[in-house]
Length: 200
Image 1 (tube, rainbow, N blue to C red):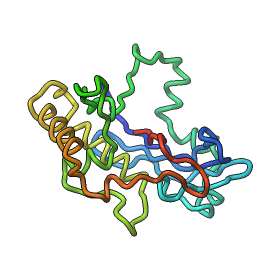
Image 2 (image 1 turned 135 degrees about the vertical axis):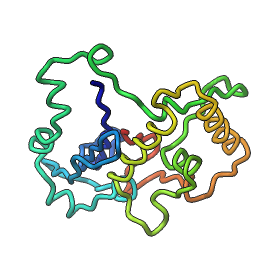
Image 3 (image 1 turned 30 degrees about the vertical axis):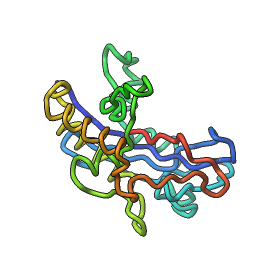
């Protein structure tokens, strides 16, 4: 029997470097969107920034989080993969929602990618992480799985997903996205946040 899970991991900054990151929270949901695991993760060593606008975590949340080793142990699905020495692409597959929804841009001969916030707005009319609301990693995981169920699972070439992707591309071309889903956060606490892709 094939089983589906969505894992969302948020990372705080351990320094000012672009790749100075360490996991600070994890949320795992099943195919039906039920939360199986959701916790803050303590980071060993100094933390430069909790990157709160992106992670939803505060420095205090991280300090009180579960040790990384314990969090990893709780994620039994990940432990099963390691223990059974399963091979990616043979015994299990990973799916990147952003890759599934990308569309070729004929003008620049490359691909248009869409953030989770844009995908959720286009699909359900919901603005995630609206100003004044705390970012919720569990919400990210649940919406990622919902998008997978509604648009990708057994429907990769259906008119529904083709129309959905085309709608997002038109919004890109016409710059018609609500500002709430396009606000760039170039730096947070002196740390570059551009290009930080949230795992889904």
